[in-house]
Image 1 (cartoon, one colour):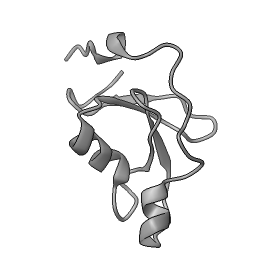
Image 2: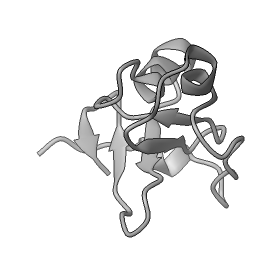
Image 3: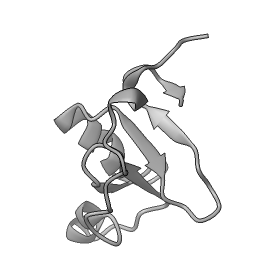
Length: 86
């Protein structure tokens, strides 16, 4: 099983969300399906089931490796670099 060390470098406490929803979706006139929080900077982007996949685009633009779900009742995290749950 692949090991991921990226969570070790994340800020503590985790950053506060920079917005209440995906601002890129708002600007584009689309609706996010679910939200993901960047654990490096607090960017809130839409998931890959959303039309424009802004959380993944944020990773591609910044290289910030780990995000977590921002959905109530969920607590999983994903590393974009290693492609694993962390």
